[in-house]
Image 1 (cartoon, one colour):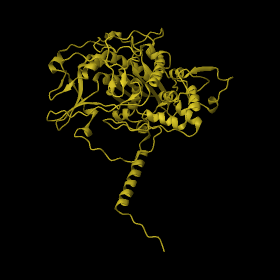
Image 2: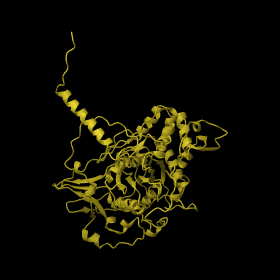
Image 3: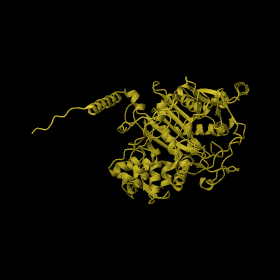
Image 4: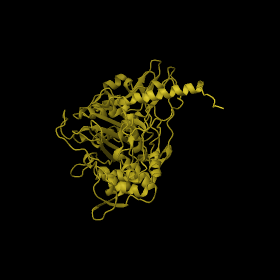
Length: 535
């Protein structure tokens, strides 16, 4: 007896049509011109996940638009206009002398909803100004307030392809994570307890790549030695790769990557593309990945979130950019803050943080944070960070240059990520742009803290009649901030000695405008010298 003939029923037909639609969508994505593909497609894109049931949007939630934001003066408009502005010769920080300094960013919807964003107009403007002044082809800067991971800056820039959506540049995983992934690897090594920050490894080579022979110990060849902390600070690829080869399995590396929300959806008001982390089965190839060579991509927003986990003592909290929603009837429709959770032990977060401080004090970012005499460009402040640099394998061969970190190192207030896609001739690196943004935040820290108390009304933005809030102490436990104390931290002590010191008072007057270190040379229209890009 022959088998019964099968036919497509209603469900089967729907499944078949959906499959064809998915294939058509995939083919369409593959047809994106190569010039657009640089930004719009992840370097090692992972397969798309099955479509999930969409969540019903609130009346305002599906109409958020950064391009529709307008600066609204805080307080009576006439009072804000009467405030005299100070002059500034700094081309990057022009926003300090405009009305942006005392305003908030608001979006008005056609149905009467009003939305106040957490973005600081001056920080947002300064980031874009830095990128424009240096003619960076593609760039992104994200700054988070570590009190609650509210977004203070969400700046995307594209001069190579003006059609690219600036929001896409900050929310898609279009660049390799490069050596910033060493922070994830270091946390995994420390969590396994077989390695400490003082574990030493002898090595040679590995500046631009790691060959199989470099992963094998050779006393005659391996004349340099460094510990894990030094390897993070100076980005010694072979040291990290050797430690990962010996002490991190494929499951262990993937697990610590997922701890930092790679291969995971990150809740946010705008869609954030998953940051893929493809861990190879081959042990030596996996060691290269652990050191930051390919197979892991990251969005700039995820980069800032990665830094925030270390800044918040191992506590993860999704970012948010909506501060308040006012309904047409005047009722408050503001969403609840995202919930936080501990994902890493505090002691591990602190140890990796110490390594990140060494990056700016003595390592790969030293030149942007200290002058040749060792004097810090930002007085009394140390910054924790990690550089990353990797040159693309396809045309136009852009160099993806990262700096992720937090500041101040001992009592974090902001976490951030800066990503530049530079051509072979470049003017700045990411750690320089990051230092400039930290400088402007330190000038505005009191205003930023004060503006968090601003309330949206039908007529504008109002400040409550109360003293300026103080900056928070370190995060004490998941979802809570320890109360601030009165004293300020001492100057330039080792970070380990300053961990438990009181928070800085936000009411402390900011430094004078002329305290900013000078821009290194005039803002040129075109780069004058070619500099090789390295890992």
